[in-house]
Length: 64
Image 1: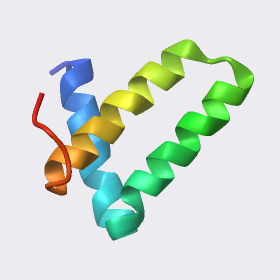
Image 2: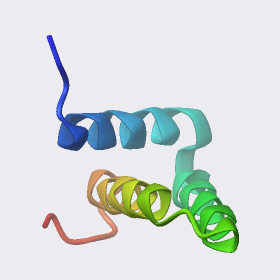
Image 3: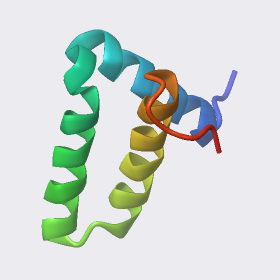
Image 4: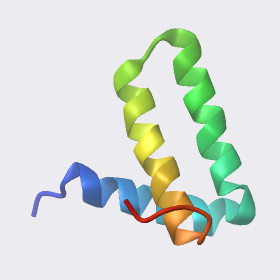
């Protein structure tokens, strides 16, 4: 079975919430900052999606 990038993002968000609780979004934002500093646009896009999923799962953001 192959997972889609969408499924991976939701799974990663779920793991981050379980591991970091309310600080999951802070962790994702920190990773985005690190990737921005090195110019990793693909990594930034992936972590932005994970951050959006964290917002939805934690009830702090839109579900789109």
